[in-house]
Image (cartoon, rainbow, N blue to C red; front, side, top):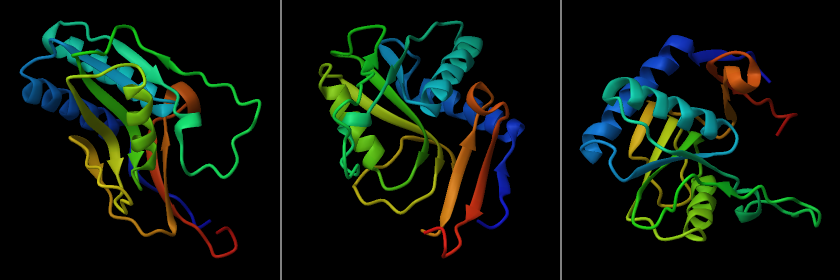
Length: 183
């Protein structure tokens, strides 16, 4: 892989999360009836950060949940027979609620489609909104985010990697070129 270039550092990620929190508050006229759900793994940490930002701004605690979509994916060629579905850890019933689904990178849309299937298996939300840190384009499904930290036009031969201090020890988003030998 060609050398990585940093497209978002810690400060840029923090600013993007603050802006997304304000946009969520504006679009929903507050957060009454809202629930934030992160897609494992990094989407969970982004969801927690969004809830913290909203609490700082509005002094209101927004429930945060997490969703494991592993067995809902349609792009896995082989699902292990012993795969363990972590499922969802939803703090409240989603029926009739506005669910703000959070992920790190939006690419083809297949992860989000799997997350929608997983959510619907848990109930019928009033509305589902999508927040992503990075939208890199190249959709294969008609899925569009409601809230975006940064739009990053990419080629199919590039990889966008989000690193978060909770998992990786640092906050940054990098982009790198895949060489033909790695494809």
